[in-house]
Every structure is written in structure tokens, then in C-alpha cells.
Image (tube, rainbow, N blue to C red; front, side):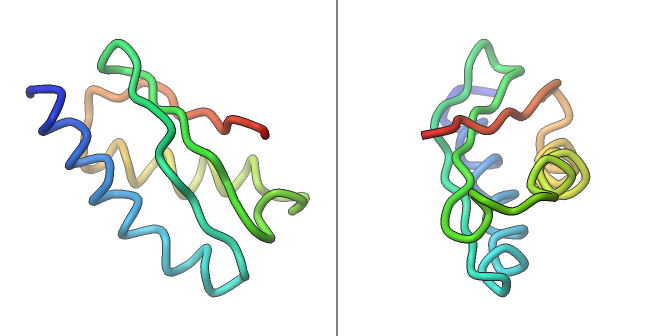
Length: 80
């Protein structure tokens, strides 16, 4: 998968999860993809201070990204 294809597929995954985050007043943006296996995102809005944002990141965001791009090994949240 080319870097452009990788980014497109990660963005598709984020578009799939975004409505759930937005329904709670949050959002997510892609910061970078490193080495083809690490995705850095930034949780935004209400997600920033949410006490379960790490669970959302692992159980929701990471799982959805891995469904679209199985080569991704880890998703981390970049704190402002």
C-alpha cells in the first residue's frame, strides 16, 4: 500500500468513527502516519477532557483503523 493509499484508508476509518465522537461533542483529526504502522491522531472537543478517551481510542478508533488498514499496529493520541 502506498503512503497515499494508507492515508486515504486511515481517513476513511476516521470518517466512520467521527459521527460517534461528534454526537458527544468531540471530534478527531489525523496528525501523521509514521513508518506505515503508527497512526497519530488528535482527539478534539469534549473528547479532550473525557475520562474514557483512552478506551475510546483503543476500543473504537484503533479497532476501526485496523479494520481498514490491518498493517497499523498502534494508534496514539497527541495531546496539545
